[in-house]
Length: 183
Image (cartoon, rainbow, N blue to C red; front, side, top):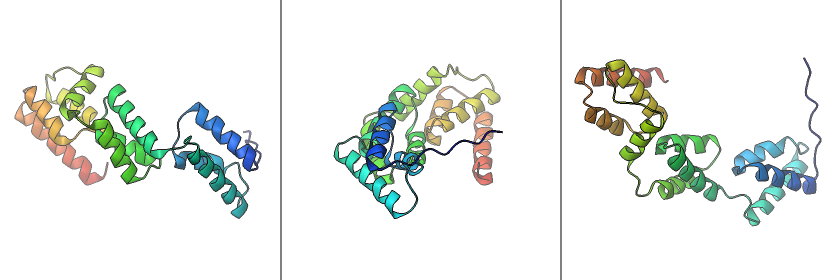
C-alpha cells in the first residue's frame, strides 16, 4: 500500500493563491475552506495567524461569504432538488455554517414557497406515483422524510392520495420506532 506524500506547507501568499484556486473550483463555507487550508500551514501560532489573515482577506474581497453561500445553497437545493427546509438546514450545518446564518438563508430561499407543493414536485421528480399498498406508501413517506419535509405535510399528501388508515398507522408507528431507536 502506498502512503500519500504530505502536501508542502505554504506561506501566507501561496496559501492565499491556493485558497482562491479552491474557491474557483466551487463555493465553500469558511469552515470548509479552513479545514482544507489547515493541512497546508505549519502547526502552531504562525500557521494559525497565516490562516486567519488569508480568511480575513478573502472575506474583505467578498470571495468568502457564509451568508451568501447559505442563501444561494438553500435556493438551489429548493429549486433544483426540491428539498425541504429540514434537509437543507442539516446540509448547511454539516458544512459548518452558523445556525443564525442558516435561518436567514432558509427564510430567503423558502419565502412564499408551499412545502406541500415542493414535496409533490419532489415526488414527481423521483417518479413516485400514488401508492397502491402500504409498502409503497411507506416508501413514499421515507423518501419525503429524507428530503426534509415535515410529518404533517407527508401525512396530508398521503391522505389526499386516499392511503388507507391502516397503512398510515403503520407508517406512523414505523416513524415512532425510528425516532425511539435514534435512526
